[in-house]
Image 1: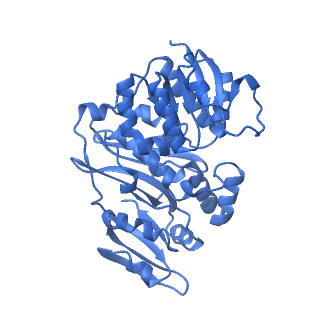
Image 2 (image 1 turned 180 degrees about the horizontal axis):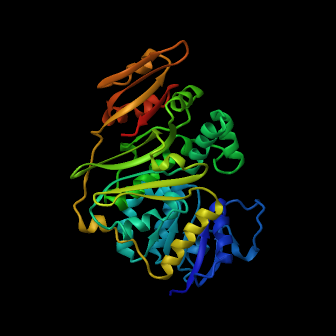
Image 3 (image 1 turned 180 degrees about the vertical axis):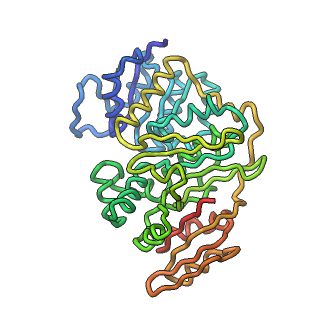
Length: 394
């Protein structure tokens, strides 16, 4: 087992969680040498010798061989991780936005430097999805991965459906409990789940898909009307991220609210928990469940990556190495519920077929078939409108 000397960037929720679990863990032979933070005047319950405000104190220290990058700023995280790898340090990262944007480069950097970059904590909190995809599902038999990948939005939807709260009240409560940021857009608009889906897809099927090519719609426009519609049909709405094989050589991805029934594995995934359903050719469906938000669950996931580094573990990216990479496509037909107010909003959507059309005094909705390719083209425009869209599970 390799002796580790750790430098941490960031001392927010995850950084503090890692610090705590490191003190209590006996599973890894590690010394914490430095914690780099940005704001000098912020009060912290830390021994002063550990604290630094200079990033180079970690980068230039030859004794530090593992860097834990746990900051919010994706651009800054990219520079730190890149420099650390080039300086011969192994890295653990929780920054899913940075990884989704630069994963191709990071894979190449690991080859060039011989160092390891692990990031299981970036994808599903405490669920070890990436290492399982690398080791257990290291074959060409996967059909789809479907999951609740964002604990904050799931907590909000749980409060709406189980407790009968409206969206604004549920969001405020999630912020007060620390599950959602003061600016919650990344969570409730589906960006966080999208970045995680891009990372998961690379390990499940091989290719790194640019996030901007993937359809993404969040829960921030959900109303009591949409909730009532779902409840009348004994359904719940979950923010779902999905990658699926649409043909032998093609995959498609999307993030959107989805109606789920009681038979669906993720129906009972509540509060800040995540749930992932892995479907394969010969083993049908398998389900992974765990906390997707919070200091200790995520801090424990980071510690698991650090422990793996002590055993010289590296991702092998086996799907890229041993199999032909599938093509990305948005040619997939979805059954969609669209609640809108203005006819001009409906006119944006070029439905191939409409099954149901309702017009009330305050709300209107249609249910119909539409190609994902069409939704991608209007993605930016529909987010500006007061409408809500949800996919039917098929």
